[in-house]
Amino acid sequence: MYNEDTICAIATGMGNAGVGIIRISGSKAIDILERIFRPANKKKKIREMETYTAAFGRIYDQSCLIDEAIVLVMKAPHTYTCEDVCEIQCHGGMLVMKKIMELVVKHGARTAEPGEFTKRAFLNGRMDLSQAESVMDLIQAKNEFAVRSSLMQLKGDLKNRIVEMRETILYQTAYIESALDDPEHYDLEGFSQKLEEIVDNLVDNVDRLLITFDNGKVLKEGIRTVIVGKPNAGKSSLLNLFVGEERAIVTDIAGTTRDILEEVVNIQGIILNIVDTAGIRATDDVVEKIGVDKALDSVDKADLILFVVDGSVELDENDRQILSRIKGKNVITVINKSDLDIIADKMLIKGELSGDIVEISAITGEGMDDLYQLLNDKFFAGRLSYNDELYITNTRHKEALLQAKNSLCKVKESIQAGMEEDFFSIDLMDAYAYLGTIIGEATEDDLADKIFAEFCMGK
Ligand SMILES: Nc1nc2c(ncn2[C@@H]2O[C@H](COP(=O)(O)OP(=O)(O)OP(=O)(O)O)[C@@H](O)[C@H]2O)c(=O)[nH]1
Ligand SMILES: [Mg+2]
Image (cartoon, rainbow, N blue to C red):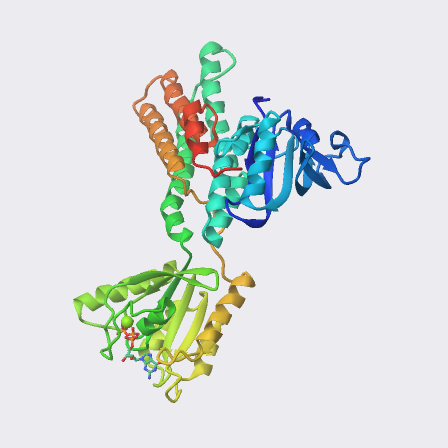
């Protein structure tokens, strides 16, 4: 047990609020609480309270009443820090909380550094470093995707992936060492080829995580949504409505949008990463053609497609070409220009696509509420979701993975150069150590200090 002084902090925000929480952790936590808190039920003894139970009462500085409070007692080792933890829920005024903090300090606790509670959880082995870092990500998460991604990391998904790779590396290294020590029982015949396969596999795994770092950044900003449709359907007009300003150029000239244009919008809490594209049609114009190719390319990568149809004209060859391209994907068909007579054949679209259809006017804004509602329904029905893959979003993790990959590639080079087996061990162990820094194995103190210093108070 990493045992130091008892620490305390205001765990709730720094500002006046209905309720404030003061958290105390360490061997003296219960002792301190006993001295400053008198349960309303006089028979109740703090020390004898069951773990994870609460008591109502009053906080006193000797005979001076400070506040009414509910206290929560959590006993080691099954607590956030693995130590005894007490939480005082008092009134959330800054002055009251400061007074209680002073009282707790007076009775032997010290003010915690930012992130120190989580640091103790890490040092006491309750979580690895990647999990501890995810706590901070979770607190700072600005959207649903970031929340989910950090929760996955907190659950230990990244840790498990790393631990698995390290076990493989350790096993191979141990085998080499054993074989060199005891050639009679461990055979190195054909070992290099096998190791090369294993190393290739490991590099693949590392690469797969590394790729998500770049994707993660994009996805952190939302569901990849692409607006497609033939020229003049009103795609850019729709984007402008989403963004709430004239972001894209809108003209009555077919082929106005040439390049793709990307915007992140928040629609009732759902983050969409919206891409406006060039109208899709067969064209001889070199620039327009590049734009059309880009549009088709983003269709393939999209999580959601908004297929904009000019409802004021008959469906044509361009619409049909797009239809066949987006068939089977997650599509909402947006029949635009509802301020005019709608003559486009909705039944034909219904027959081709299984998705929803909504009618709007990008000029008057009519029907936009229906579109928002549809997005909402889709999202909460789980038909539209942020990607569930494990993502690397932390630069420190990315660097460590790159270094691990580098060492693994050196192993491969040594194998291909026909080096002796004992050459492999050094680089294998380097890879092992680099991966270890992600989960905080063999982490130097200063690295841990640096990470936890970025935490907020009380966590
Ligand atoms: N009446 C009417 N006109 C619209 C509506 N939406 C867009 N328009 C007009 O249709 C024309 C094309 O609109 P854009 O938003 O530029 O269409 P686009 O699909 O981005 O076109 P490209 O970029 O050329 O592919 C413009 O003149 C718009 O004013 C609508 O709901 N009703
Ligand atoms: Mg456009």
